[in-house]
Image (tube, rainbow, N blue to C red; front, side, top):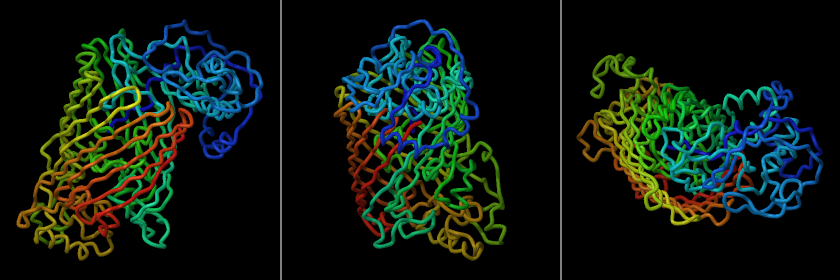
Length: 640
């Protein structure tokens, strides 16, 4: 899964930090509602730290790169004296790398939509700056440009193929690394960083190249699988609409509205455009919401999902450090920690996706790894990635750790795990990742990858992933993304086997008070260790086999058309084959067609309504009662 998002903002440290006096402000209805939504919670800490900073000298001008939309962290611009003005009567249309029109913030000409002019207009009070910045960017397709910003792409490097808005990325995603050749330190356009920029704390962060930013994502759906008259679900186990949309994701509860994710990043990204010094970076990310179901790694706060099945929970999907060495060929980046799995065209983080819901191909994929991942630019067009990890969704401290086999301890024979102890997670073992990226040939990009490969023994999510992603840009408005993979696990217990069925029948006797007591009995993934969301066993074709290899195959394409600089229309076509039913719980072949719109009010606020129709060869939806499902859904993402 790629974590690349909202790149190609020009760096904050190349422009000056100067205070501007507070001026009068006009507030639109949207600004007022936004204030009510985000509120003081985002700024309680900032207010305590904020005091007004002194003036700093301006950095020398550097020519801007015309190949990328000019985007900056506005807060660092040199502001002229503020003046009071009324709100604009209409937001202009944006076009291409820079917006065009006749009016912008507070009725000024579009030619004055610059870092300096906007910084002057939004004032000095951190709360006013925060909300006024949303208003300033309303209707714009990029952050206010700075003519003195440095190049955003290394010399000779391919130009980025997309812009954000309206796409969820600028460069074709490949994951496992900060973008090589087109990333500047502290280059994300963030209202939070704008708000605190003129405080001592904000200027310290700017000097260090550190940013804190994130988003909140609220979603909802109406589903044909919903129970009649039962209303929305109440809690993780409550309500008759709980989980009936599965195996579709991330709107698995029917007819409900939910906080999918509230996310915060604190990071410093290495500058991969420069070529004269070794640079470093880090990222700490935290997520809260229903989407933690899809990021949980066994052993990392997994008690929420596996012991209690909470509707809402937290996780830390990315915690890593990075070192960038530009002198090795065309640049070498080394990442150490927990990171998003490679490569994929979708990701757990909401803004990185074309649509609100996800393909099944992505949903039953691997999510995160813990280890060391290297990415080497062999040429400007070829990147080789090699890494070692402890497997997929596996914790380093589970490697080699054992626990009591409760079936053997109770005096029963266990043909699956014959000893008195078994590994906590047999899938937590040394694993290798290797990927090859070939970019910018015939307006295309291809990424071939083998992710987290080891013996493939059945683990919590020990998927052996082999596949590719492909992108092609037809013109400035139209492109296609595609992904194909095969993934497998070995020695998966056979649900069709009488011996395995007998083991599972022991569960209620051994664990009379446990939830899902009859699931995965006699394995590391049954009670008392995992009570909910247990890894599925397989429906092997040979009923006499005690175990078998489970395989699944996925193919998904997104056809994307950009009618305006603030809108993208995506058509998703998918085929997914869960041959042994180990991924979805049903041995079925799935098809789906979805159409979605990504509409941005500004670089900070986006809406994504969509409609998807699903079909399955066996009853799989509505808790295994239906072969098809219609899902109308959507979300709103507010960046900060």
